[in-house]
Image (cartoon, rainbow, N blue to C red; front, side):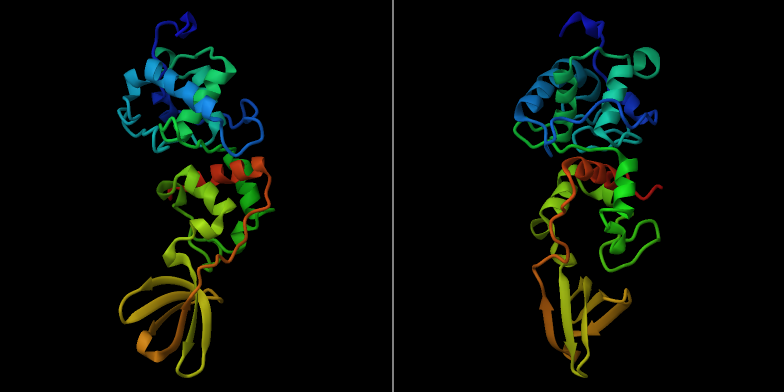
Length: 260
């Protein structure tokens, strides 16, 4: 690498040590993903400069797993850029004077899960994403977060700890393809003639539990049902949010790890 690296390995350990400003530079070119070229640049840079601290799989610093996107405080792509370019704690995490393509490459390689042939998902600003979640995105009309909101759709309080950026983006852009079987809408008809629609929570051989359209927890014996239909269609259509809005919303969802 050029001598601007001052002979020190590019190290992301300080990503866990500081909350950084949300905005450093513009996101890449208005696409949902970084280019394959950017991922390849990041792959070469990581092997040459980062692996000495973080290891080939990005998991050799306590509490950090770069490959799976497990950070303590960093959430957006710009958070990563800020740490790399500004540094933290002197030689523990020095500042690096990278070209823009190198900086974007490091972010792209991390967001592609260390797969040079993978797809890197842009992650935007969590604060703007939160505004979108409760505003134009209309997510809060169905989803519950930290004990607030309806129960008609899955609780998202810990979604950032169990879903990758790619899975979250796919749920927004392709909800039919991303819908988990347990979350498919259901329709029940009881022997007494009551029709119940809602979201399935659990099912075994003899019973089914669900949240009905009014947000009530219901449990039914299958022997008491005359009809039990599970839809393969999502309740929401693909989002009409812009590229930047999707990136910001993904950033907010990743911040929901149950610790807020």
